Amino acid sequence: MARTPSPSKLNSRDRVFVLMEEYRALYGLVEFRMASLDRRVPAAGAVLNTFLGGVPQLPEHTGLVVIPASLIWLLRTTLNHARSFEDALRRIEAIEQAVNTLAGDTLLEFQSSHPSRSVTVGGRTGTETIAAVSLASALLLAAAGVLFLVDPAASSWITVVYLFYLAGIAAYLITLLVRFRRYRYQGRP
Image 1 (cartoon, rainbow, N blue to C red):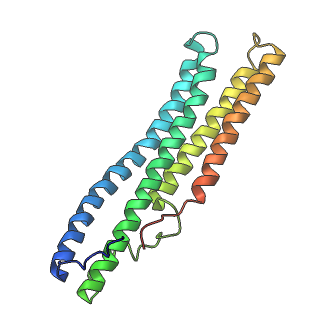
Image 2: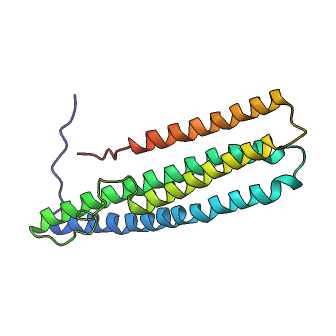
């Protein structure tokens, strides 16, 4: 037999206190996610720089295989931080609304009235970071293709296989971006 949950013993003041503790904790998480997103842009630039400067020094096409594949990791982790950032922002918004309802006044409103709310996943920070990482990834894949095409040691069948390899990575990265754009926070009602 299912038990009916008993009504909460907390008064409005206690509820607001609990919500504000969660609010503070979530803002700490938001700071972490934002810092993680901010570190992705220099990381993407460093990967591109390393690739263009370091590939000739690596043994036999190692960089041409490993570095493009590493873009999958870079983009997936960037998208994950942006989704987690979005989740925290949406929960903060819900807390603001709950506190305002309990208080009977608009006391908290930054996230619930933010211009990018529900427009972009991960807000402007997430959008800009993903755009930068995506552009760096596209440039790196193009550079890898050009470097392989101008390599006189590469046979034609290996070149075709390599270009399919790059196209496969590009297709997967695009798929990740399309799925990401469809993401919506699913909080409790």
